[in-house]
Image (cartoon, rainbow, N blue to C red):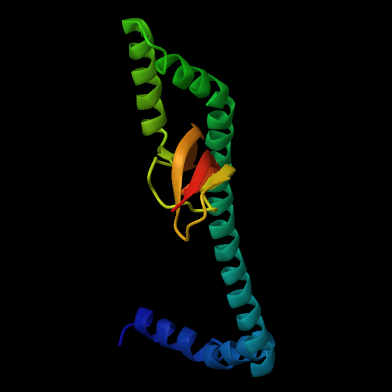
Length: 166
């Protein structure tokens, strides 16, 4: 052996026992199992709570968007009703028909559907009965006084109808 190898061997032999130092550090930083389980449980609860928070905020964003569109459509109802009255006149100009078609396409793009047709069964969840005639068991829509509308499957305005019992 040469001198360099001997000095390296002496250094290794002279260094303090690293494994005993490592055990001392582990003992200093170790925690009881019950405390570890509590920390782990708290961490899992916090992660689940954060996940629920993200889902809840996404739903709130969607509902705010839906409510704002429904509010916008509600503000259009007087315009829609006036177009309906104008279209029921004897003579209707081409321009008026064009504007009515444009309005209908806008409502369709917003996923707004008309509710209530003459001859269908009366449904109090989507119809508002103003007048009732007849004495039968079956109630049918006789006349539509004002159209009703659904927005994404939710009723935003019931159809105002006259009901006839048969």
